[in-house]
Image (tube, rainbow, N blue to C red; front, side, top):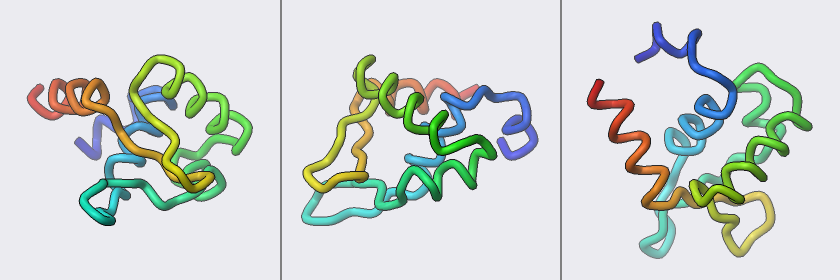
Length: 87
């Protein structure tokens, strides 16, 4: 998968990083890293990451958790990831 990372667009890279950095708190998997950290990981601007996260939320792949800057992947996101990992 690491070799394919170069060919994946930023939207998918953000989704993959959110999934990779999840931790479980009280039975809920959340991603505790902020947009600045995500932008460093996917090599794009914080503004672009903000835009992508908004799109992921609008399309039902990610939900904002109670605390600002914390995100939870939805079942829709897990289906996409399962498809990607099965290829």
